[in-house]
Length: 404
Image (cartoon, rainbow, N blue to C red; front, side):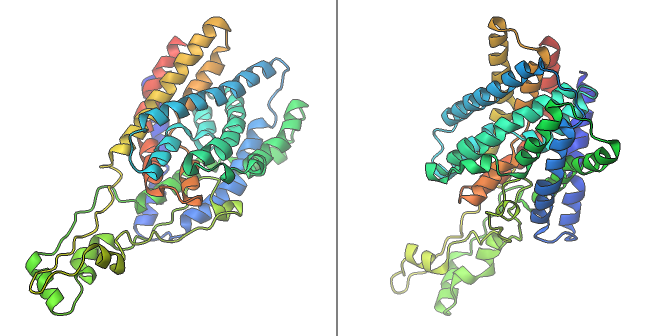
């Protein structure tokens, strides 16, 4: 496929995030907009997308072989990238940040973005969409097991029932008998199903834009009061911690941490959705403990809290993008081509698995971080950066499809 054609298709997808970004910036969307859209995405649009992808598709018994290969490699390739990611981020000091980076490096956006991308890149080839649906079955299973364990490090957090009891999987289970039996769904029924399913990609991109509008792009400048000024404030009985110069950079941001995925607690009935991210500055009592009172006549200095890096100046975010958008698809393609030398695979199976591996980070990485107390800031920044950079990486990687 031509580079320019693929590039335009991917750009058109990401441009769908602009309305959400603009409306949130001008405050026409409230703080809870992302969580409300996420509920609609989880319970309505994605399940209907799964159904529309299976209904009225011709099933042939010979397809089962390719479906089996897709399921097998969906598990193998995700495990492979998981272990490689652990090696890449093994020297990251903060455990929560390291776990978030690993999760963002191998969990791909298979459901919300994978199926629409396949439809755009391969119009008329229904097999590519079917392979993506089959891959999504394995992805959901691994997300609620290995994905949860990656974020938490605790096996007790794994809930196998969530593998089946989630709206997209229920939709697949309902649709499979119709697919395997080649039951024709009337056009009058398919039309509303298709309309609702077609909302998935635009809605997920709008939520992405809303989240991007609430994120800080660069690290905030630290404002520390002069030593003499701090001393005057102390002598006057005013705590410099309360001075605007210190806390201006740590003011509360009105951010809805709910991602555009299907695992937020309000959407699934198991998560609580917070409306604001707490102030990042230390509480006054903690600062008092860490900065003991000076001797008589000495000036007291209170350091300003160190602000977190923004999306654009956090090195971990770029490393996650390199692993997820470049290393993951190339490693997957290498494994598939080597296996193809021994057991020949269908060409479109290889291409489908390769493109799926090139998808940006799934929102489930952020959702799990929010659910189980992980590093949601790193997960959010990585998810957004991956989605933006895939505008360039997917078209470049698609050039390799000509050699497969």
